[in-house]
Amino acid sequence: MKRLSFTYSCLAFLGLYCGQPGGTGDKTGPTGYYAIDDFDRVEKIDAHVHLWKPLDTNFIKQAEADNFYLHSLHIYKTGGQPIEDQQEFSLELSRKYPGRVCWSTTFSLKDYHEKDWQKKAVDYLESSLKRGAVAVKVWKNIGMELRDSDSSLVMIDNPRFDPLLDYLEKKKIPLIAHLGEPRNCWLPIEQMTVKGDRNYFSKHPEHHLYLHPEFPGHEEYLAARNRMLDKRPGLIFIGAHLGSMEWSIDQIAEHLDKYPNMAVDMAERISHFQAQAVSDHRKVYDFFIRYQDRLLYGSDLRLVSLDIDGVEKIDPGAIKVFAHSVWRDHWRFFVSDETMETSEVNGAFKGLKLPKETVDKIYRGNAQKWLGIKRQGSPGQ
Ligand SMILES: [Zn+2]
Image 1 (tube, rainbow, N blue to C red):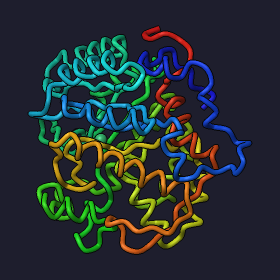
Image 2: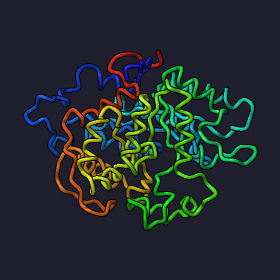
Image 3: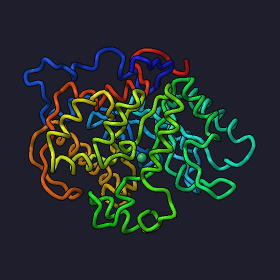
Image 4: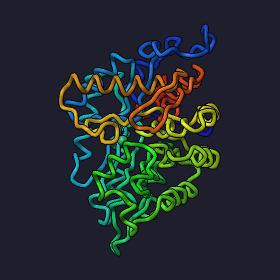
């Protein structure tokens, strides 16, 4: 990470992170490990949530109680909430909850085929970054939905993205990418490794690519992503959802070794670590120790948490209870060595009981470093 030199930072986080972080990263503590009950004492960042509607402020209220700071990601979706509205909402949250919320922007694909689309998209990113965005997110509609004039799917290595990606590489702005799907999407339901995927794809056969062999395979999505990265060694890249390599820590490790400017967030894929810990706990532990500088904690909390529990929340109290239980269960997995079971995974597994130093990195330090959230500095420099 030496080559990273971020020149801007997230205003919202400055208040919080000026000075030392309250001793929570103290390696010389009595045990070198956190207890489960240290949960609300330790400052943590959830590096992947979606705050889009007023009801989502309940996640923020629970974050205040649980000592979490939130990084909210914008997504461009056909027929979805306009990205300009998402941005106005993020700015409102930054004002209303100073120091608690930070956000990343995205660009529209609506006029992708228009001549001036690239310029407009870069201009939009530039203005978002000036207004406080810390990074740029791309979503799986690139590769799965967006089509070229010859009707072929547009992948992330398509040269039409070059001006945007060149801009991000040059300006050292992180690209957060959710590209492709979990590998389970290409398997029959009964072979899928976690319950969330089985539930989601059995309810949404239209997205279950095992049933749609006309789509590219899992490896082809990774290959397109890798071709884009090969062309841009200076691009700061965060693979959302474990970079769609959740099924194999070996595959994640191989990519982190190959791409020094790559990190991954764990959003909505922690169950895949747990599934792998059922059969080889030590291997998962060793992976976390070895790559402790490259892993960002994230939950993917949002109102429709489809593969977390499949139910849209509308009651403020229920939203808070839900967020607390997701965050607390993950914390228990990382800090304790208790034997646990979840409805997501077949079989019992032990918690990882990671050292404090590693927990502090995945829960705070890595988000600060990879998203350019600095303790000092001023926004939009
Ligand atoms: Zn997400």
